[in-house]
Length: 134
Image (cartoon, one colour):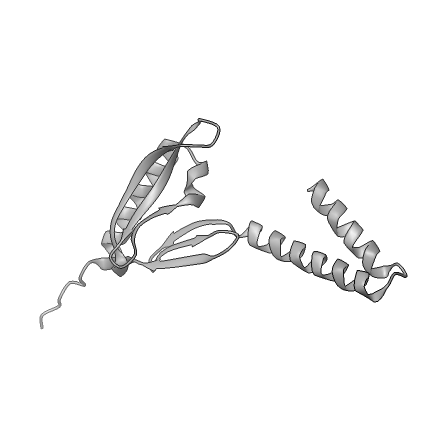
């Protein structure tokens, strides 16, 4: 947070100080990029709801409807520092195996709980509505 405030302060100082126009443009671009980075960072994560799965990372947003998901499971991986972590992995009918990297920062039990709830939601969303005979 302190680094962010420092960056914003420097960018704003660069915009309001009497400097050449090129410096104003450069500081404005830095400030806009930092604001965009903060906005995307605040929205990182995986959302699972009735319509499917949405994964938001810094670079992209992936939406996968339940009708395109053929399997949902948890895999254990090893992080860059050698620590074990769990990751939710979706198998899409069209895209194949897709690990949800935003789920990797949670413990194995947490990810398993999410996988169970997601599977239940998937079954409820893809279940055929009961026919009502008159």
